[in-house]
Image 1 (cartoon, rainbow, N blue to C red):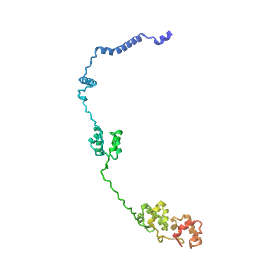
Image 2 (image 1 turned 90 degrees about the vertical axis):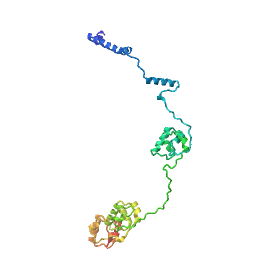
Image 3 (image 1 turned 60 degrees about the horizontal axis):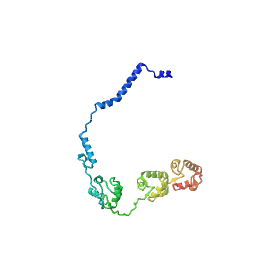
Image 4 (image 1 turned 45 degrees about the horizontal axis):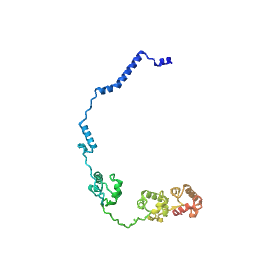
Length: 297
């Protein structure tokens, strides 16, 4: 044990002297403030301002009126509220004071009005932070707001609605400008209608307009009373002389059907009637019905 203590706590002479010096410095640092206070600190002088403040505090404690100018305040005198009918958009500051508001509260409302603020209904008074809910309950029965805009209510006369008349257009002869006059058509639809009409050779009934791209049944009902169809303007196709080029753009025929029509004609001779076309199995009854108004033999 003694050997262990000697290993960890034994000090040389120099280390021992240094330890004593350090201890002395710590003691000096600890007692220096007390010595300084005892030898050098003087009584601090009290300023005149502090002396007057202390005197005033003593007077206040004795319920006496302080003579200092720093404590002179004007107290606002509140009289008992007088309730009367009023328009918050018109009454003046003195009227607000009679209703029980302070000068500061009344002035804030006047400033709100001066900046263009208006009270359109009684509940708008609640938005003013100067008017408490309790005060609002007292004032609410007495608020009478005249038309805030200062205008007399206008009497609106009910005019009889007259339906606008639109021109009736014949669609087989009309150009795009004429078609544009139809309500709901417009320039884009007018171009589509004329392009489709040229491929068909003309319309033989109004319902064919629903075959135009983008023109659905809803739009057709909107414009059907503004159009008429002249079937005499339809361009007929001579089925016995027509070649592939003259038939390929027709909306009701496909390439295979056109080739079959031409090949059958070459093998069996000219067609004499629609009955001959019905012999071609590639043509459905619907297709033949659609083609009939455009064919001649």
